[in-house]
Image 1: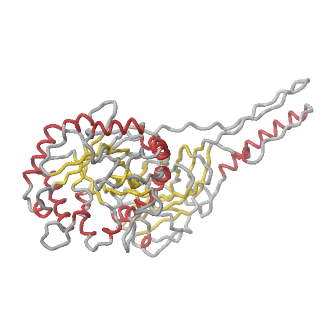
Image 2: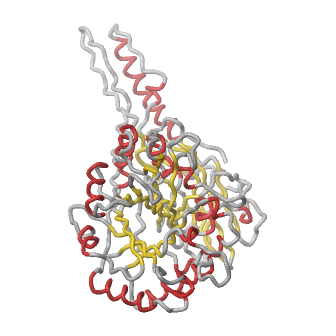
Image 3: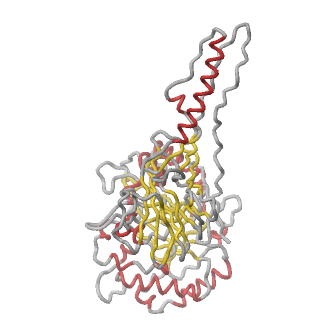
Length: 538
């Protein structure tokens, strides 16, 4: 299916005609003028891009491909599920300020039509349902005859973007024109910041010549995006920004976080705290921090519920009194929504010995029992996060897969992972490296969670860049790599930085202030508007 830049060519043609008129009039007065050439002439306010690839799949015809057809199909009929796929390439050098996808229906549109990001660009028009790539979260939806989608939050710069289109209808198949159609092919309209340079007309000598105005397309303004969290605290667009500061020090966590916020220039929308056993929480300090009207925050509470016990005993109900006390406390003091992690980084606590009470299967049973009991007791404002270490050592263990407690009791997937800024040191790398670690076999962590648990948003619940104490190294490259990765990885909906000048073993500095260049890069990251997300905690 071939790209068609007819809209762009038409716009250039109209501008060329206007310039020709101007040149003819002024030349008639004895003054020569030529239109701008090269990049200046090509600058436009919009790019209209055709799909470089588009097709659809059929669940009942698993080996069939439909890339040559002049239609796209979505919806379900007689248990046959059809999904359409489109791929667009935004040219290098394009400064994107907005994007909208337009589809042309063939007949009526039934049900809600939705668009999801496809988590791989490695597909062609020969795609079949048997080899269909995994999908990310829904990014836009529409209904009625005007099937267009605002994708400004997803398409943010040059690159290849793969999209899947689906329908909620279970009894009707909706069809759209494909790129093979004579008219009405899918179009991605990309708004850019490139403005047409002004036409400079030299002074006209007597006799005066009336020069007709040149109509130059104006740059569209960037549509405002009201990114906000939904019932499960998932942002409608953008990414939640969070922090945990003062770890392994005596500084009160609220004071440490406020200092960190002042240093970075941005409020930590997610405030990460840690608790164990029967400790009473949320604490008065935590409640006060998340009720600061001037600096809205949401709690991310990690609870090692089996402290002083075992996972197996919790699963058997031996800590139900502890669970019920937590429910009663939250109901009495804290109606706001919050994130809850049960025993983050469980891989590090596994004792793979039968009867230990700390086997991977015991963790899964503990997690299920706790979440189901919280729900049975009427706790409705806890959004739970299953937070892994994502370390290749643990991912290679035969028991690693047994940790997962089930999609029905997990709201968010989580990852606690770090990289080193020291050349040649353990886990040296950039932000992508902490996301893509994998065991001896199988996919990397990000690929695993977005394929095996594609319906779950991902939180990088702890991240940072370290060097050994006394061996400072520039963290700026790693910090600078974060924003581009967020554009490529739509399933990441929150990142929470863990900041400390020394870790639990006292040999690694994970602070943002260890070098001037690193601090400058982190502060620049903190200013990015992708983190402008409004919290809805009620």
